[in-house]
Image (cartoon, rainbow, N blue to C red):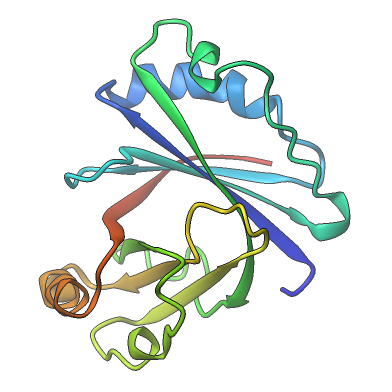
Length: 180
């Protein structure tokens, strides 16, 4: 876990899933290597990022090359804004992928001002929590948290987060595609 870096990218767009995935896949393959796993997730909730991709690799292999020019140019039909959140180290991984297909993933993007995440770790209305801490000072967020929970717990968790948090982005995401 300590030798892994996750590069997070957000995509602001109104493009529907089939069309977006068709444009995203060749874009993501530019970054994929034999040791990199890339996962695309889609949100149906109102937030800035309709899609988020995670590029997972070993820290020794981390060479995420930022494309020259505007990232949006790599989506030929336009209407996509690519936001580089940066590289993050996993500091707490509790979730086992594929174990529970019915669970929901709530992603919380915390500003750099939010340095104490213990309050989130103490919440009880989720099953598992993955925590990623900014690897570089230039990362857009200080922490990215992934809460895994039952759908019935979603509104309770969101209300608790909204009451305790300032300067954040939050959304419910489901996996669309994984490249490895």
